[in-house]
Length: 237
Image 1 (tube, rainbow, N blue to C red):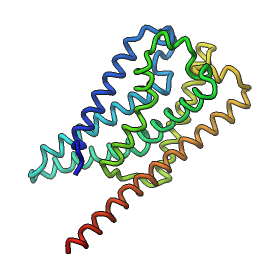
Image 2 (cartoon, one colour; image 1 turned 60 degrees about the vertical axis):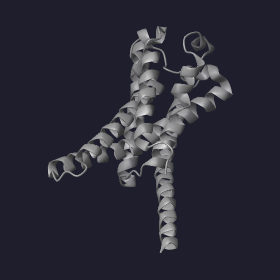
Image 3 (cartoon, helix red, strand yellow; image 1 turned 180 degrees about the vertical axis):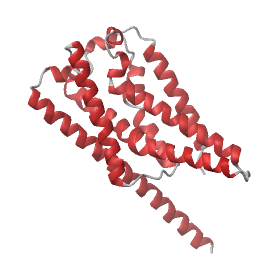
């Protein structure tokens, strides 16, 4: 039995995301005042995705609790819709985008932090908030995957949805550059147009790989759990 119920963990994670978002939005940074505001940064978009996802998780838990013992088919139907939305968000957005943000940020940060997180930002963003945006996302989403089985969509449908998100964000970055003349990330200022196309293509492939990784990890975790339960049951018999 888990030391902390999964429902309590989800509430705690949701509250932590609210805290991170509120503290981030309260920062008076020049970038927040330019075209696109915070919404031009994938980190902020990911934080919103994670907060909405865990909000749906909490809502699903509450609905499940309220419908327990109920014979209303309408309530059961609404609960199934919530569970379907929760699982879809986990598969297509929360896991691949969350893992992408964490791994790409720290890989570029360790290589040359000025490419993605200039030292000037240290004057605005405290270290704890930086880790809240770029580190804790990964353990939180792994905890969710470990505590709840999520039904993934078919792989083609999932990959199409992930590609749509990736292409949509690339087009959004290009539009921001078209309007302002400045790229969202300093790295993009230093590479040629052809290199940008290759870079965006590689990142799209990478986020698709993370989708497949999430699907495999989800199956592995819950197949192993099922094997353990079957073994324990056999021993009991």
